[in-house]
Amino acid sequence: MPAASTDKGSSDFTSSEASFPASDLEDRSRSASKNSDSDHSSNEDSGISLHDGDREPIEEPKSEREARLGRCDEIEYAKKRSTRVKDDDDDFIYPKPDAASLLHQETAEAPWITDFLVSFSYMVKFFFARLSEFLQARGWIKCHGHAETWKHRDFVPIVGGMEALFIRNIYRIGSDAVNRVISSVPGTVMTMPQRVSHDYGWTYEFSGVEQTVMNMGSYNYLGFAQNEGPCADNACEAIDHLGVASCSSAQHYGSTSVNRQMEQLVAEYLGTEAAICFPMGFGTNAMNIPALVGKGDLVLSDKLNHTSLVLGCRLSGATIKVFKHNDVADLEKKLCDAVVFGDPTTQRPYKKILIVMEGIYSMEGTISPLPQVIALKKKYKAYLFLDEAHSIGALGRTGRGVVEYCGCSPADVDIMMGTLTKSFAAAGGYIAGSKRLIDHLRVKSHDGVYGMAMSPPVVQQVISSMSIMMGKDGSDEGQRRIKQLIRNTHYFRKQLKKLGFLTYGHMDSPVVPCVMFYCTRSLHFIRETLNRNLATVGVCYPATPLAKCRARFCLSAGHTKEQLDWALNVCSQVADISNTKYGMQEAAKWRNVDIVY
Image (cartoon, rainbow, N blue to C red; front, side):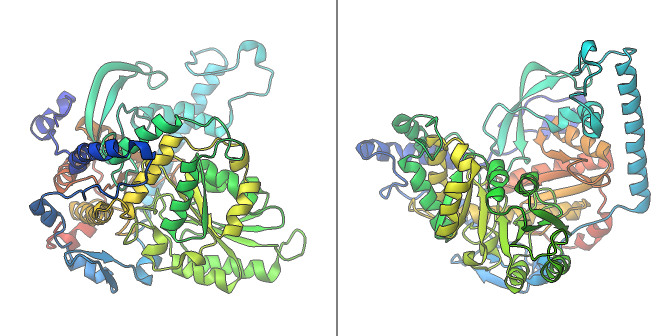
């Protein structure tokens, strides 16, 4: 696929290398869509179907399949894995973690000189931000942003505080890199309209040019973000039968037959008694945690939990205590103190204790030590809320998340939450567990009572993609995607290490952060990669600590080895320019390691 033209400064590379390989999932989805036309025509009178039993399995040429299912590099991987689980395919071994790999995951602290320089640079930024706000308030310089009128100067300001100061004066300057517009599905290859700003990020104008880029920033873990293929066809069929929206909550008239079908399928996929789905992943956490805990209860929350979890805990009114990220010892200490001393404000025991954690942490790429946490929650009679937004579909031998990946039983997790946005390329979230829990949420959840029911085509997208993962379409496409994702993850992580990047997280996590410490260097890196038609994500303060800014890559089952090699080449060249290879000491250990795809 030809790439759009870029800056002259990068012409030496893009002129010869910008035509990156396209994903093979696009070709497979087109062929699957054509093959399913006859199936749809013969089943028009039967309504919307979960899967077509007569549909031929989607098979690729044998030579390509054998090449993709070649063995992973086992040299370094065998040193970190003492236990392995073998798949039905003799050419593939899915990793099974040991306790050490979960308790000791890759992190790095900035050297003291780097920490000092980063902090000093932010002091300078905030000083000039304060100075700019001071001059704008007195009318000495023009204010380009939103502000109160002169007649409201004596009112309490609508916009104020450190957060607004940061957004208006520091975040704004890098908004061209962190707030990007796309004009296609967020697949492995996508199009982005180019924008220009003449006032340093206050406003943007579209230039009328679209840029074709390789996407390594979206949570398209299983590669279902496509507008062609059986999932897209079934979603269109749902529109024909049920429309685009029910315009009502599930408690009134919003629930349809496909909504109930989806909830049953989610429960079957996860191995739980029941499940309930909601139209928004953020709201699934924020609106349902208050229905589970309240005043007199204790919530033990991981330090790096997502904002939706933090908001839900705060809205609940329960006492909140934060434990160190993935630190089982610190969690046990706080559990022990809670059981022994109870609520210090009332001098009574807590009514219940809820542990809140994630499966994969999207900013760190780390995987939760679930077996150890389950042991603690049983020991201290606590409840466990597990957010699998990034781990469902991305981990486990059949894609059932961190519970399957760690070899745990779904019955040991009291509340299993996940989103349908990322791996299944739809929208919304779910909560799964016992039937008693789900019946309680149907009545008490604010999102279920007042929120809109999920749109029928979105529901059908979930049903179609999840059915493929469960093999209900009669093919091994789901298994093929899982194998491709874990192979891409291992290959890309190891190559980054070999190139000298400092990465975070677990070897099996498809979220790959590369630490660059300085926000300016992170912005420079992602701007330059975009100039070379590679779209990635930069994460800086306040989403991360001051001295831990990073670029983040998200692997997909849709990426091919050729695409990953192309992306690695781009990243290496840009890192040499921006001086962001902070893992050169670690790279020396990989110098003589032959990394096999």
